Length: 220
Image 1 (cartoon, one colour):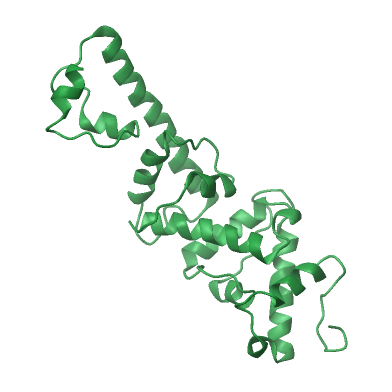
Image 2 (tube, rainbow, N blue to C red):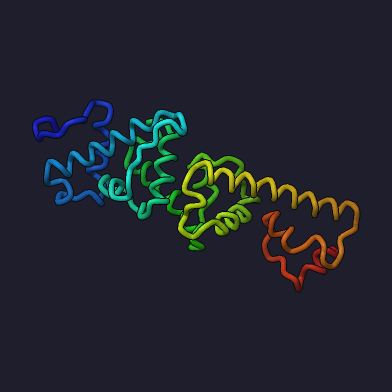
């Protein structure tokens, strides 16, 4: 690399740089000038310098174009780049030292923004945990997905870690409160044909409750 006129390559970042060269999306044509190679090295250095395990102190500020240069797919908007930058900022270096690890994080970020846009497949429990979002369980995941869907379609409601964590934590709290309402109604045997409501079941993360079957569910 030094002989080629490329700066910033060290023993510590060399494995990631070379792993990126092996990525199928990085072709010979995409690294046939010194500038193109230097762009990859510069992006890698931003990533590894940001990944110090301390969230919020050193976002790499990479653009969708920067991520494309290092072979990372699915980061196509400012919202996705913003969220991925913050995710990397909170990771340690060993969590972002292969091309596949970077792509897995990018796929999780893409799933969050796609969910906000109402697309499918929706983000999974595993992907949210990969993004270091706490409190997600199989039981509350449907309510969390619905809450993410209710944010702006452009992803700006979940394009920071703080925003995404708040959406999830608010949903988890609301889901538990809704479960308590249903449980209390069952304990007191005071459910009616209309209460708990369909919205309460929805907040609890329960699917399949409709106006037509609500009376029977509550009678049970």
